[in-house]
Length: 600
Image (cartoon, rainbow, N blue to C red):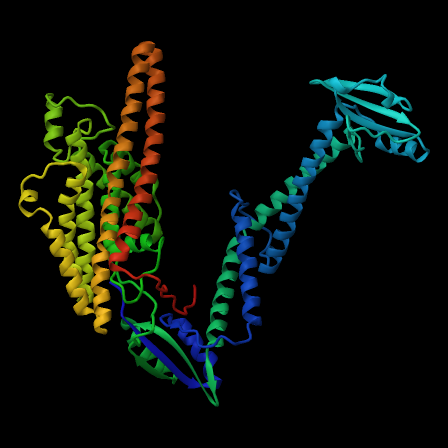
């Protein structure tokens, strides 16, 4: 659930403001409200710059995977930062210098090893020695171009001629590419590359030594972050004579602790409920299921303080959508094994991610069993295993036939009906607005409408009710929306018309759930294709070669298909929550609860 907030006004003596705000930071429950836009930000900007400098250095050192275990002494954060930045800059220079030297060697290896200083000495005496590269088809030494110059062909390679010219005047021609004279000969260039490599090795060793000081930087960042947050809170105080005050948001459950702090530090605490136009920050109080959902909802948006709590709802429906999109017990079993074997760690985030991964793996296995899909292997219904498999698969449909295809499509639509009905009932309960309940029969009434549009014959209940649930539901929403709209007659009439128009959005959102069917079909057909390729290769190549190559193709194919299925399951499983469901029950645009607290 979302925590209820109180607006706290803290009043005290101006001379005790730093002491009181420091105590608030130690307590860590008050989200400070920005009261001042016009304040001296010089010190805050300086602290922000320090934070960025430390964090950038930590990122550079984090790239060092094998830090040395012993270092001589402990350096100060400033020394670590300065030295790391200097080394990193020099390493970049070395890499660029080496690339430049290698390019020079690559080009000048066609001209041989010589001392460029001697060529430059000849040029100072008025003798111009130039080096060129030209295509064989355009190089004619006897042409008028070289009338005033001597030409010496040095080497040929890949239809290219490498030559030099000697003359009293410079030679210029668009047919030839002049190669600038290097500053060193080949021998010296290779020697310099070796020296740069040795220097790079020493600097990398020093960088590994510095990476052992990462904890020093981490501690320094925490200190600067705490000071930065303290100074930002100080900047938000309002001083009036000998008194000061700050305001912030505090959860109901933390009010008693704040009152105790007030008694201990001698400041006045005033508490008030949020005003109608105020937007307090959003804080959650969830179980494990809700906590996993929290990590998902913040991918998209922060719920408003006045919204319903979406965390558990998003987690549950995301798990269902993900399982339906993949719908293969074999793939689900692989995901479960990977989740149990690879996702390890004691941090809270990793534990929640592991639980999420296990849940969606089990969902995938469940829907794979319900649809009789095991790596898309064709199972004979008359066999012993086939009878068990298809007995456990009430959702299995033969999609090679029109009836089976349509039936699978409508399973996805029914999931959409359940999802959108749930969020509208949830909203009606939370906001005490009965009008939202009308969308439930309207959604059910859309199923016969879609069957009519898709050319599927009505059967059973559809013949009885026809489209009346749709008409009745929309009319119910329109009437009660007009009643619940606290405005003039014209405003109520506008709300009535808008509610009827909203059915267009309802149709679009429900149709969007067909993506579940489409993605599931695409994954199944790809899996069937790789199974067919294995069979063809095995039958054509024989037991040894055919089987070996076939298994390789089969494994690679299913791995690719599984990765694509996971991407589709995550992206579209979340999209159906965020795009199709959210706007029926949530406003969004909230601010996450971020209290002033001291990091340890």
